[in-house]
Amino acid sequence: IKDHSLCDGMKAERRKAKNEKPDVRNERRHFALIFGFSFLCFSLSALSFSPAWARSNQAIKAFNEGVKAFNARQFNEAIPAFDEAISADAEFAEAYYARGACKYSLKSLDGALQDLNETLRLKPDYIDAQALRGAVQYEADRWDGALEDFSAVLSKNPRDAQSLLGRAVILLK
Image 1 (cartoon, rainbow, N blue to C red):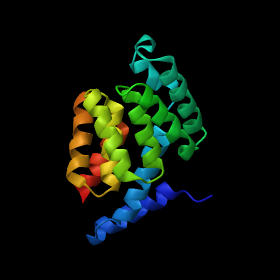
Image 2 (tube, helix red, strand yellow):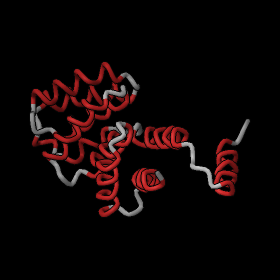
Image 3 (cartoon, rainbow, N blue to C red):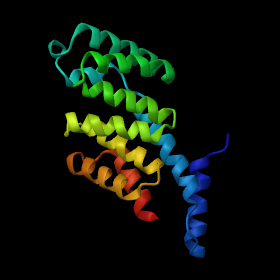
């Protein structure tokens, strides 16, 4: 088994010695893998941000179906369930967030960005949504927006690994 982190570290040292710029594509791949792994651990805990009594049974049921499909990495099947949750409760920020996460996983970056913007309109302090929006903007080569999102997350949670990594990669460009 090849230790890629050791190889990447050695390559970085060689680039540094030769004053070469890093391969941004490789960094983007590593960032996407790390960020993607972290946010794919999404679970029903997202529902804890909103009191259950504030949501209709139909919205909660649809949301739970969507989360089940999401956790099974069936993103195309999860989106209609989140659509149903949003139709039942247009103020369900977590459903917008989850649908945005699905769209991000499917590389539908504009759709993901729309859902995450709506999430943050409904819940401006939703740190996970802001971190994910930063990742979406990063993937869409919208560096200023990504940097702004990552910096905002870090102002609230200075140890957020994804935002630290995303911000560092952008600043190295």
